[in-house]
Amino acid sequence: MDYLKEYHLNEDDINEIKNSIDERDILEYSVHEENIRKILDYLTSKKLNIKELLKNKSYLFYTDASVLINKFNSIEEDKLKELNDNIDILDELL
Image (cartoon, rainbow, N blue to C red; front, side, top):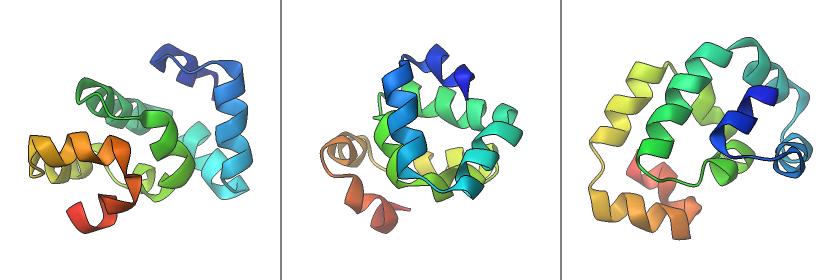
């Protein structure tokens, strides 16, 4: 999961993520790096808090990047900004 450092996450952030998710998620983040990079590239372009999403919404990263990006593109910009303040609204937005 060292590739997460390229997304401005430090070692402490990565450890915090690892401690917040289960082994299956850690494996997913490692095995499907290419897909996850595409998702992270998109999420960072929208200025979303990827650390919180990686920690608390790991199921997102099981989705094909193009499918997830299409879903996010359907969300209004003001709702995306709100998402950074309240990650719990994500499920209703998608």
